[in-house]
Length: 250
Image 1 (tube, rainbow, N blue to C red):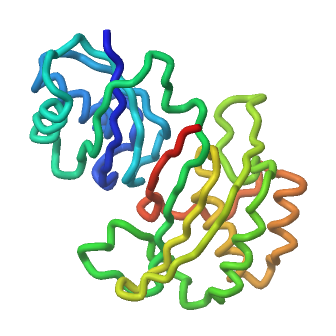
Image 2: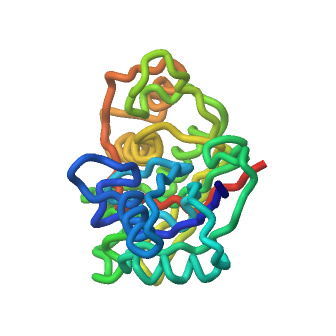
């Protein structure tokens, strides 16, 4: 039974995340349903990242197996896309070796986080977060604060602990900020080999809190990295601003 890799883009606004759940529509379940309607086969997608509800992707990577369709890959991709809702698009489809897994041998994942500095235009509003205190933020200080995360740290204070005993140590390769003047926004580009549940959203939210609140300081944030406290929860940035840009493999 052949194994296929797909690279998928989606607007996550109307979905309850990537992973299949009972009685709700998720990205993976919508894609699997479309495949069944076109080709008459049930498939099970395994994705590289379990994006949350409202989170978007330009380069989600997933694999699946199916019986040989005896159809060229470009025709499979085209027919599949024709059945998908407009918020999901399969960008690439290719057959891969049996030992390829989207979660293993990851060299680097790139995420974007879009933060609006003013009220957004209607056609981009769902792709960023309008933080209600943004006018009180010293943006230069915010950008400097984000650099604290670069390197290897224990991010137990910045994630949802889902499995007792699982390591919460992760490495951030780089964090860059681009100004998107035409949209009144900034794009925060975060790169690393892997991330924990809610990690990026809390990294963004905590940095905003530290810069805005007089009772907090950059030393407080450093303390959460040096001496993790999972019970200390500050602001979690909204999912609508987060986008999985791409996944690169070794």
